[in-house]
Amino acid sequence: MNRWDLLTWISIVVLGVGSVAIFAFFLRDVGGILKGGGGKKD
Amino acid sequence: MDFVVNAHMSWIDFVVIVAYLLFMLFIGWYVSKRTTSFEEFFIAGRTMTTPVLICTLVSTYYGIDVLFGTSELAYNEGIVAWFGYSRPTYLFFIIAAFGLAGRLRKHNYRSMPDVLEHFYGKPAGVTAALASFVYSLPSLGLFGMGKVAQVILGIDPWIGGAIFGGVVLVYTLWGGLWAVALTDTVQFVLMCVTLAIAMPMIMSHVGGFDFVAEKLPASYFQPMGGVPVWLVVVYAMTGLSILVEPAFYQRIFAARSFKEVRNALLIGILIWSAYDWCVTAGGMLARASVDAGILAAGTHPNEALLRIVIYALPAGLTGIFLAGVLAAEMSTIDSYCLVAGGNIVYDIYRPVFKPDASDATLSRLTKWGILLSWALGFVLAFYFERLLALWVFMSTILTSTVFVPIMAGLFWKGRKTKLAGFLSCATGLASAVAYYILVHQLGIRNEEYATFILNLTLGGRTIELWQEYAIFFSLPLSLAGFLAGNLLGREVQPPPAGSGAAP
Image 1: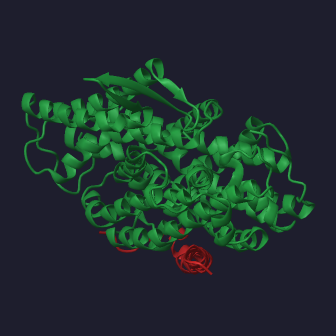
Image 2 (image 1 turned 90 degrees about the horizontal axis):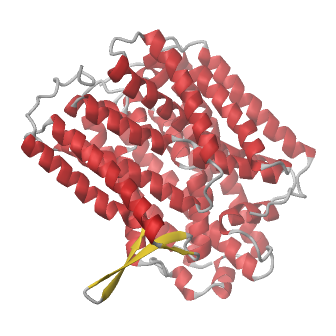
Image 3 (image 1 turned 180 degrees about the horizontal axis):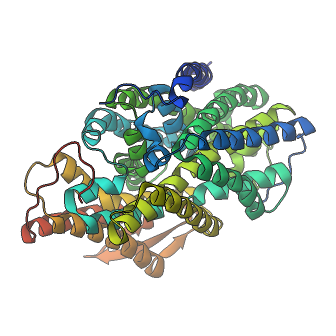
């Protein structure tokens, strides 16, 4: 496997695992957001 | 372009696509029930958290220009698409995360032209709104959507653009920024996961980079490739537009806090870089596949990625990938329709005609603005053939008009005048438009880069002026306009922190 293949595989993992993990965090937040719980603002 | 209906598509693929579209409409309808004020409609009540900001930022920026534009550059030139075009933009995102977002959150702005109105008054704000409106017209997205529809259904691109773009229009009108952000979140997951599934399959079908190296010239693996250095500089400079990008500003204003935006940007850079590389690799694999006879010889560079993916994916997964492509398009179109609609109503109509417009009036008219921007974008969508050239033109118009006065407003603590803001916006916009007209009228068309080049001979030396070089002239002229206006105009004190635009 050359370095470009390696970079491609790392990118695939970041895209696949990263996007699913972010979506999981989003699901944690979404209920509160839609009920209007904006929380602390700066 | 010569698209054909994909022979691998089965009824499952169509069911996936229809289900996806219906789900987007459901989200728009559901959110519409809680959208009660203009601030709720336009900047989601300033309640967005990091995860939803990541999703909406990443998916909004990555539509047709990246999926087909970057892969087109990779197809033609190789890894320069990532090193020369994509990577510099991450630097601008880092600058935005640490230098810009905090300053923008000090005031209750609602839009990018609001910032200029705050520092320089209505004329500068309205000029910026015009540039933002042109930049935000969803032509690129609707064009791409039409092409994808042609692949999926074998229908004319403009009909496909009308159908799929119509779905976007409906849910955006229903739910405003919350509908946009929630649909963006689903679209973000779809576009990332489907590309992550498609890439290994392409590599296993056609081979990895050993195969690419065997088929393509060595220049494809040079970070700056065979692209003229000034063109690489121009591509990199399109990243400047991030610092003044209206959809980006809208998300900064919609965030619950500055920290939420900063964290979203830093995590987003990881996702963007991975997405960019996969698209670059896909473009190069497609080019190698054309040279090897795996794909048809006449494959157009900006359709190559789509073709290689369809070639590699089995029936069933094709529908999910095409839904992912639609998602990439839709997430861009919805955001810019909303921004452009706001430009017409909140940034132009309100300050010029109706400063005391009620919340309900602004919400209602913004929906008409969204409709108008969608219709204009649709009309323009099918006039351009080189996507990257159109993207460079749009970002040049925006950056030339607002970059200097916004940066001066936010970071220059010295004297500022209303005239400086207006002259800077006006000279930047006028010079960028004039440059494009001049090069188009007097220059020669270059078929290799699908651009216009004006050859100027000065002192025995010939200088090539590409249409893409407009920003080298317009930005200094915008700065000159700012300095001249600052010299001639009367100093103004912007309203204190915490307020929005100038009354």
